[in-house]
Image (cartoon, rainbow, N blue to C red; front, side):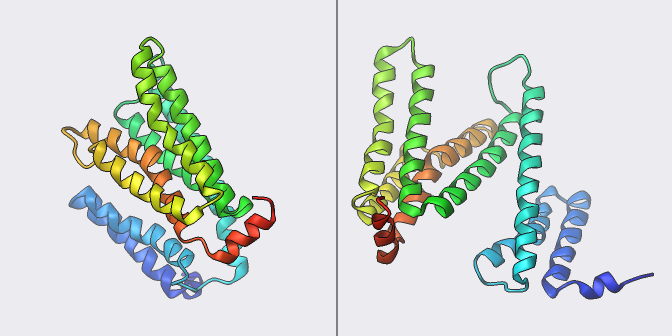
Length: 240
């Protein structure tokens, strides 16, 4: 048997492969919660590399991984959309497995949008666009949900005003805006009682709200607070 491929694996690769195999074995024989071990093996090295903790790849290997990740995201996102479309054909709601898939799809999309905008525009411009887009998204959602209830529509529309106000502030006082955004995100988390749920379905709904409403606030707020003075000057010089 040719075992040269094993010798070519890095120590991180061997550990990751062992965790993946062990997690699957324990999951199918004892409890599906052991899939967490599989997740650590499959995705843990990637997180460690992005954090700069694990440095076992050269530039070529990293570019190859980025390319593979991009292709994987295209196939994963397309597959999730097709499954949701077929599962919920003839209806206009997300429930059960479809909602779980929608959560994964939302995470995939959000991470892609946040990363690409930040790399292309820089932090301040990216935050401005993200807050504006999500404020508009939630405003449209509220208008469509309550178009027959003008009073409720008006009251709930006020909820999205902070998105637009903080988007404006992020261009002028980034770190102050970032701190306010983080506080607002934490406040909304407790205001909407996302920490409690009476059923599995409610848990999924809370997760979706957290991803689409709270996460944009926490991520953009943290990015602004961590903004370095030289980064702010560069953006300002570009006309940001």
